[in-house]
Image 1: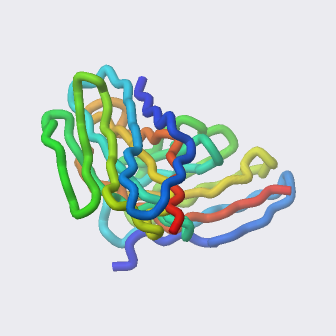
Image 2 (image 1 turned 90 degrees about the vertical axis):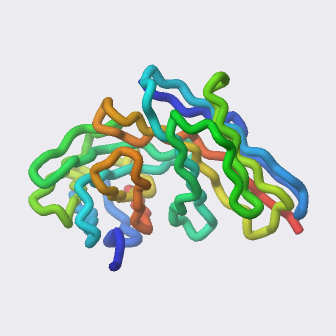
Length: 113
Length: 116
């Protein structure tokens, strides 16, 4: 199993550009989520999905879109990048039961200039 | 609402010292899980432990131990005889079982620096 994979590892965008951060998992996990990590703020939930076709907003959803057309993939779209979206982005997945540990991808470091 | 507080932003110790990382949480849920994750300088997040709200037994795993006290809403993490390889950012996190989609709420993290 590859676990949770994310691409790209690094990305630099100009303000106003759009892009998609890719996330895939091969563990047949129901639950997938996106977090952003900023200094001194821990990890904050952007969007999450409890299964294919079902998504919901987390703590900081503004400026981001998601979709979940398959169990395996959960892309995060930035429609019009802003400097405030400079961050490290982590994708995570877990089985449906709440007590299960969450598996994190290696992260994407995004800089918006 | 759920909240996790790690009041210690940075801790610096000398190798072989014991160190305790504090975690205090707030939740109205009666059923929840608590987690600790480690983030070494390489950046990945490594799962360390999971504890459910019905199990207040302390746990020891090698040099790591965890003290869960429901009465004070705390889930502290102690590293005994610290080593340089323990240098990392450590996150405490909370997940309610039944509410809010089972979202994981993180504390701000504690950066531990172990000097030789």
